Image 1 (cartoon, rainbow, N blue to C red):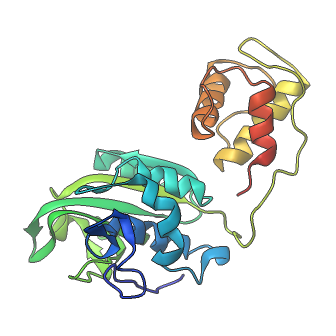
Image 2 (image 1 turned 45 degrees about the horizontal axis):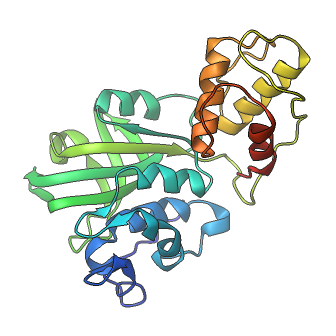
Length: 260
């Protein structure tokens, strides 16, 4: 586990535009830093700093608002994280984090202003990262990495220091061995596939989608039903294609180019 910490006001990157003018990393870059804390958990990014993620994430910065909410999951997917999800309710986050299918339990928390248990996370809005999670004596704990001036780094209990202060939580996973970008090693489907199709080509598609999403979301029996259509649409949306649910030439081109 990479326990490095960054401050968004660090002189090495604090002056960088986010997105420009008065709005720079030192006062608006908490979202960018939060994503960087997760990136360095991957071997290929282990030596990165916010200076490396700023050029890409700047596109999701808005003057006076910092990082757009949608910019967090988009950036995590861009950097190869698996099964990225966002949760407005903690019940969904607990279900995700306590799943036995997760290899690494990490993510980004968006806090609103306020204090709990003597801890003030922000006076406005603030993104922090968590790089590990555990349950102890019925309470939930996050290993926090905080780029703000308060530098809340370490294990914090949700029930005593966070309850009622979280606007949204983003969760993500990485493979057990995430050293270099992985490419799909199986056979790709041939032809255009859509709901109702059956056979070997559908099996190939389902196997690919299971690889892409990092878990067995489909049973791989070769029937293109509603669930397969759902995950084809999800794949298309993430790859900036029109989510038609039909897996054809454009979807195949995207699939062949995906690395994780």
